[in-house]
Amino acid sequence: MKIVFMGTPDLAATVLDKLLQSEHEILAVVTQPDKPKGRGKQMQYPPVKELALKYQLPVYQPNKAKDEEFIKKLEEINPECIVVAAYGKILPKAIIDLPKHGCINVHASLLPKYRGAAPIQWSIINGEEKTGITIMYMDVGLDTGDMIMKEEVIIESKETAGSLHDKLAVCGGQLLIKALKDIEHGTAIREKQKDEESTYAKMLDKTLGHIDFSNSAVEIERLIRGLNPWPSAYTFLEGKSLKIWEAAVEQEESEISKDSNIGKPGEILEVTKDSIIVQTGGGRLILHEVQLEGKKRMTVDAFIRGFDLQVGKILS
Image 1 (spheres, one colour):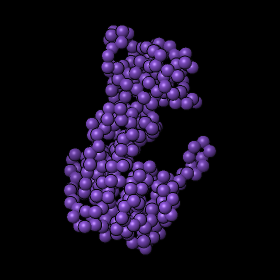
Image 2 (image 1 turned 180 degrees about the vertical axis):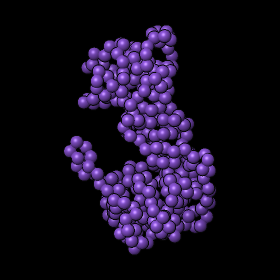
Image 3 (image 1 turned 60 degrees about the vertical axis):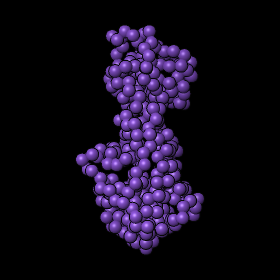
């Protein structure tokens, strides 16, 4: 099929790469505008644009998907199908109705669960045991269109949003190729979503990462994994932000933690050569990898060699 691909981040680039290796023809790529990044605020291409330019594909970066000139350009290109993967903008009906085989979305959850912007992260934060990819027809709603194919992916006990993202990206590319074959041959089966079973995976922001130690150790550990690598979970130590990159829930009580009355939420109970044990609202959290404001990310054993960390300090 003749396809226009719309996507922006790394996940979309992985899906596009798989599509480029297939028999389908990519007529053009649409992605979000370049954005300044880093301390120097230099303009940076989205990952999808970088890949498209490598293959010398036409790239379009409209500020708004409903821009009339952009829609006219799509009409001129006249794709048989538009494939969307994490594009980041709502498509107007004029675009959804344009290709004869429709707009197909690669969504990183098992719909109707986790509609919205951050399904990968919320599946970990909420303690799901599995997630997956759904290939679906797009409509004017937010991830509400008819489903075509699904594939489950297990969420491992130490899965981070980053590692799960990479798994789902590969799965999404592979499943898309299977779905496109059925769509092209007219054998794709449409399955309506049950709206009453839907959940919303709201967009992430940095404030979500501020750890509330009155929550349980289990909840906090999931938050840490779910926000790794962005926006990251953090607390404050002596007025400086302290990112927590890796932690574990204490499974066997240490001598000091056998007294259930000891420790306030956020209080450091014990410092060993390679761990920091912190009281939470339910159980104790063992910190393994941290990053103090202005410093590099490091294991706890390296951190405590350069920081005089005392038992009794409160992480706020």
